[in-house]
Image (cartoon, rainbow, N blue to C red):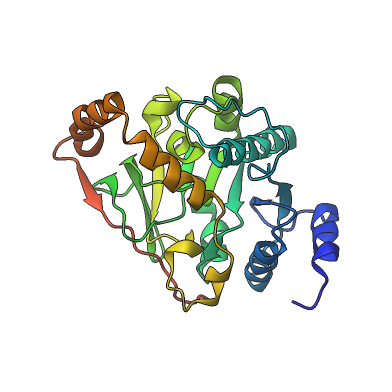
Length: 280
């Protein structure tokens, strides 16, 4: 990309939408390497987006993080607040839905074809998950709720972690702001588990195959892995210390069968692949 990254950011903040779907990209101002990679990917597919300034959880700035938070590292707390900013932007915009991207995402070449299909938005689910963790497994119902050309949408009972690419409806963004604006658990767990949001109609829809993944999950030879996620470091360290808590371990063992295998016979554990095929 020949443009200076500062000019790119100013241009992104000033443009009008040209997509059928509003796209919000969460990015830290000091991570210009990730901004450059995301800009190149989106520009190559003719997608216009709006940059949302991420909350910095790695510096000394006061972001309201309680040092004795029982579930979140400071990085996770900041990540959550960054997504809250997007939810507010969606509600203020009046648009029926939006696509949320984190700046460590790698997009499939067919990304724009899926998000511009009118049928893609006909299902009632509040959150549509576009990413895959590649090696992890997601519990989905056996029959798809919607079939598109080369893709299917499944209701997901329990998703793998991750929040780097999802479509969110405005009505549910308002629900999240009204009931979950204060960070309590990691934002990906909130979005991917309907039990956490206390909303009966928020079964997540999972796109299969996925059209996005995180750079950190790809092979090191891929040039896109040069801009890894800062959050992964804080998340791994925090989960390791949390696992030492006996009560947490007991709860995890008791709830595991119900979370991963309900409803028995109607759902299945699937490893979600990613599509890197080109498109017309």
